[in-house]
Length: 361
Image (cartoon, rainbow, N blue to C red; front, side, top):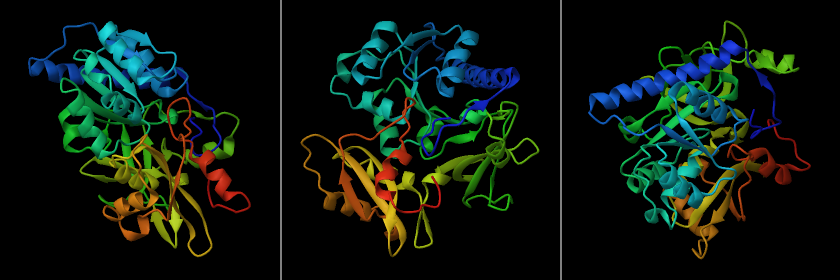
């Protein structure tokens, strides 16, 4: 697993589970091809994917690497992520499909050299691992008018299977990770007692399908917590569902409980990322004598933007309820991420919680 909220665990699957995950993505690709053929827009180029994520991560392994054998898709390997080099490779190798963490597509869309390269062959700019800010969805589509942003939701524990939101549907619902992948995924939102919640109510995402892992390696207690029975997996993600569309709030371990209110850092991050002076950021909970913990924004400023902490907090007040507004802003040089691009929230929290007892993570 990614280890972004805690210590990494070894999630092991059998052959059936991995093949199930691979063929689930093949079915989705076939669906997309059939849809494009119906519109008279079927691609004529050989499918070509730019591999910008590590192959030891489930995204690189299942939907990118293994699916490519079934599709006859060429793979173009990047040793290390660089947005400018990615743009060059898209032109040189006639890349048709790109996937990475959400920030990667955005970095290409806003790169100063973007217009120097012909990226018209790339019709899909996919992402996973976290929701995209709405502002990013619009900017990516504007920067690459011949392509569409896509978003997938899955876990290491599910062999990457979960939800998908594609093309025009994603533009219409940019805050959703889409519907459960057809025809093989059962998905529900449950409360802490295991009761199914109605549309619009926030709880934990549970999933069931043939690609679920067998367990965590040498961790029977953790396996029992995550897999309570009847084929279900507890995702650890907080979300709600409306008309079958899933809307992720945050990870359970990243949630801030401030004065009894649940605060979701991802919601705050999405609201703030549209600020022109912010290049990257992460929101974490830090200890507070009165409220237990409060939000803090760690911000990488755009060079020479002159953005201030007061300006960022004022921007937050215009967009968020009072209890969700971070209490402070720290400027940092970079946000630490793991090889798959996820923010290492646990690493960010540790200096602030030294000598304190936090409930999770």
